Image (cartoon, rainbow, N blue to C red; front, side, top):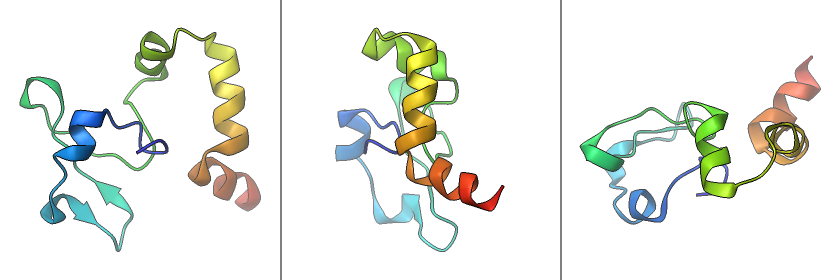
Length: 77
């Protein structure tokens, strides 16, 4: 839930058909019955900022340090 940036309602509504375990993607249904493809979070970091009320640069720094996909990408660079 955390690393995908899912809302509680999205998490509770996940069905097995929405999981692509081979490619590590999830297709949750969000607000307004909107479907999105998720590897790690909201489509835009500003959406996360709205919910957390935290400085954008702080969020970026934390994301780079702790998000599982970002950490994997950092090791590949």
